[in-house]
Length: 526
Image (cartoon, one colour):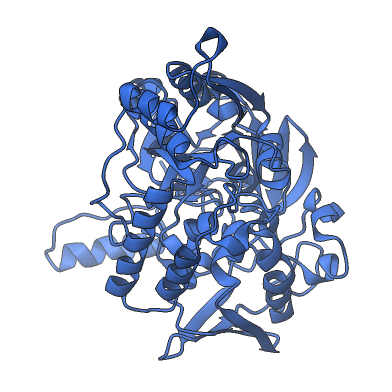
């Protein structure tokens, strides 16, 4: 029989003596061992400061820390920062950093690392941070080794939600200063402050992390290893999970969810957040610099031609909903629910193409487009290809590995159509703004891929960021949506839901965040 601690025994005695009901919840035993996580793509980089791609953050977010963590309700809690204060006018945030934090190579972590990371990495290469902060952040000051002050040009209400490890992983200044950030060798052999240290990376196969024995959060982590296995096919991931070859799957194939829920061997949990962000919309990207996509009627015709209800059923297995606005319906205070619909209407699509002057030629083809699709998104691309064939548009779908697809879309701009999961974040300033502001037309992953420009949209994003009143901010965001819905630089397809699944003996994975394993443990020896 398992022994009971003296504290637990005293608790039982106290309950009995007071005549209260005898109900004591004993804490389960906590075991370490290895956690094997399935991921659909190779991370491409282990520097989360230069990308918002979920495969990178799935791994890297366990190596680094942010100033704050987001809890299951996406509210900020302490991480590298023990506490913080916000100036009454909303223009300054002061963080007091945790003491005795060290990088994995033994060097001390200080406020200068935070200042360097924001100024030299995030504001240059992280699409969401650059898009959200570039126009409003005035300075980052580090007056003491444990104090960082962010000063803004005007009140900024969304900063804490963008200071976690996904939006702002803090990097070691002593290893990156004076180097080419994008080519630094530590992007492949990372050194962080996080709960797990890098051990090895076999590209295309797996990444192995080991326990940080000197982690600044006492008693954490419990696990000895986290192994991220690359399994590109969802069917293979499911087989591996059921055989016990992997322990955690961050996106269950929709068709398998009912069967997995009926099993007692697994825990199945729904979530709208994950390593790449929250409230995600699968989005089609028009390259507005490529004719005929610079013609609004052509873009409208393409949107009318796509059967998004079929996509929800056939591709997502019902785990999603048709996107009705550029901001997710999950961000209720900012979502615009009054926009006119774009229903599946082949006749309307054909009429618009005729009006635009693109008649059918040989074989009924009006024109041809190249569609770049990462391999995990190929089924959605195939639905779109088949839909557009019905209105005389010949689409060449080019399937590429995830990292290669994003590089061709955002860096090389070598595409006509592309497919991106743009996560909106808990606040539109985090996940939405980077898609539309003209300052973010840069060779930066997950930035303004459409090369869209509208001065009024730029102005409204600044106005929304500068207010602390949620009602005022929501009004600005709804006006933004009216404009971009009319301009149609993107075509918003479906809002995705997902279920995570993991071994029933695993406890406390932070499944809503990138740093899933910091608090996780096994209730049985592994």
